[in-house]
Image (cartoon, rainbow, N blue to C red; front, side, top):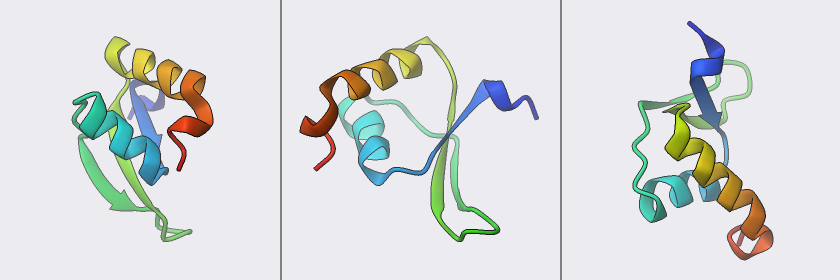
Length: 64
C-alpha cells in the first residue's frame, strides 16, 4: 500500500468537517490495532489537500 496515497484521519472533528461540510467521502473506517482508536481512511487528492488547508487555517473555530 502506498501510504502517501492515503490520509488516516483520527480526529472526529476533522472527519465531520471533511465529510459533512466538504462532501469528501472516506474509503473505510476501522480501529487501530494497537491503540484501539477509530480512524477514517481518505484518498489523498487535491480536494482533500485543499480542505485540510482550510481546516488548519480556520483553526479553533472548527475544533469545538
